[in-house]
Length: 197
Image 1: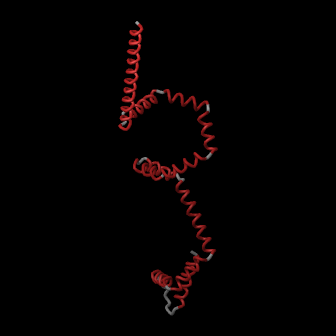
Image 2: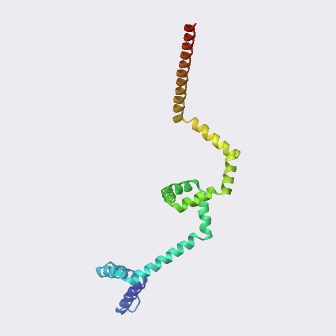
């Protein structure tokens, strides 16, 4: 920004050195600056300016300032209230959840490979307090109702009904084959008794 100010100042001095006594207006200065920047020399000056390390440092400082201002804005009370209201909208929440599915999956996969995380998880679920709480949850009436509902839905599932039918048919055929062999063994015993008489 300093360099642009210097360019403007030099243009102003040059226009002041011309014969007219009245200083140029804002519109005239603006037009001269735009014309100067559109020339090859002007473009070359801008390229040189952008390659200057001191100017790059200024840009980096500006980036840090932007970052700080964004962080301050995001952490303010107004932003907190805004995000609360936004997340109350079911469509927005659904869209956000869908957009984060891939990142969540990657995070979970990475955590499942992390031995320290798994160890912490085991110790957490293996603690006496946690076992007690899980026992209470599993024995609660709401949990039993949910489990009953899941079992009923599983039994009534069309994909499983054909499997149930096959199992029943197989069980019936095994009974019939088992029953026939008992009758045959009974009749052979009778025949044996008659021959002995």
